[in-house]
Image 1 (tube, rainbow, N blue to C red):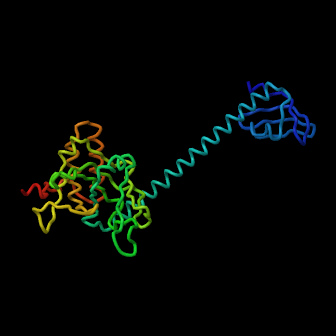
Image 2: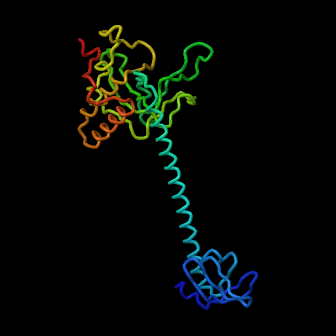
Image 3: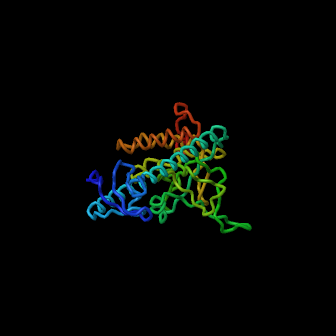
Length: 285
């Protein structure tokens, strides 16, 4: 027991031999020929003090190791808490900025995902925007000016032999909360750490893109001949998320979809009760 330290002999590099006369959890008192001295316990052992009793010395070293490990744990905990505080402050600043930021009515994105890339998109949870087709920057990754933290990315697909009207919705994700369009140089849009959904094949068959999307100049036309990306109405995205909530049967998945839907509406200042019924091109046939 460490309480047995009393009367144990120690050796100090400068004060020579001494005897332990007082012991507390955080300090130890030692009587030397030159007088009584106080040291931090157990830090001083191994640095300034050495116990002549080897059994007791091992116990003190074990205690010292435990204290050092506890100090390291507390240091890491404080660092984590500090990181969380900085993250919360950044979120608060972003929320305050978004409250005053004007939201474009079409700040959502829809992508045509090719079959060979679909698995990798959902494994990495990001989507490639595409490259510039002409001009001085030909071949460089595109940037989407309207894409920000309030944006969602809709992932769609149709097979080559499939009519355009049967385009399916594969999944959707909010843009990562740290995404900055101005500094994005690799052409990929990363998904939010929480708000992301992938539909099963059966669910995708029920979520047809053209139930929501409409070309306002040609409301009965369903064409997507070229290009990878289109901007998308905020209200249409809200309709899709609302319908995904209704589509989900598993309670946990439905809860996640509902949280996603509510977060999206909050970010885009959409009142859920005012979202209209779907009126895409397919609904007008």
